[in-house]
Length: 115
Length: 111
Image (cartoon, rainbow over all chains, first blue to last red; front, side, top):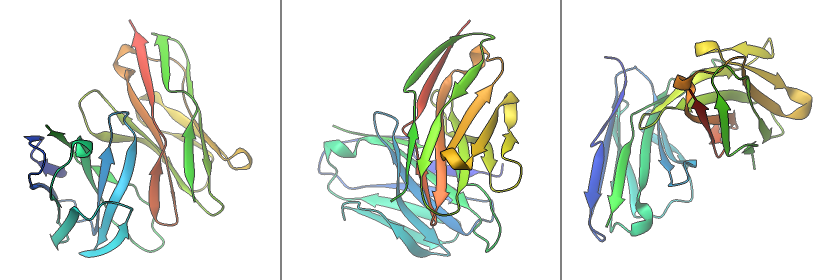
């Protein structure tokens, strides 16, 4: 299936731990994103990579570090997890071409619960 | 800074009722406009989009939206909702390279 996939789907962990979420897209897109959806369903962009280069970095604590090993992957590593990090994290991708309008495709989300 | 505002937090309708969800944005430049839907426990799916041209756009599942530039609005409509339309609906605006979402509207359709 062509899609944006994320692993794991659910992640339950203790405060202070370090965890990673992986994202992969096989759509041939060159731009990938991480969003955080809080308990009130509010979606906010965190990071964006274009051709493995960081292009958007919102005011996110530096405990969050995205890594893009290639155009098809964008992983999110979180150090020293805090209770407030509990949320659903969505990965998305898009083909960013000059003069071409298109939409982002979203992954299924990773529900992170920090205890 | 751009922002997106959705008027209704929670809308409850009976099947066959008509739906209109409001969305207003603030951004001074050219925008691309989107409505996404999130069914319970699922990821976001694109309902429809506006980039240019006819301001009345039709999407999937009988949804449509109208872009009114003078009002900075992009309201979502459906003439007759079904129980399966129960979901969270997000308006989103892309301007200056970033996609900004509204706070979402939860739609509950009673059978």
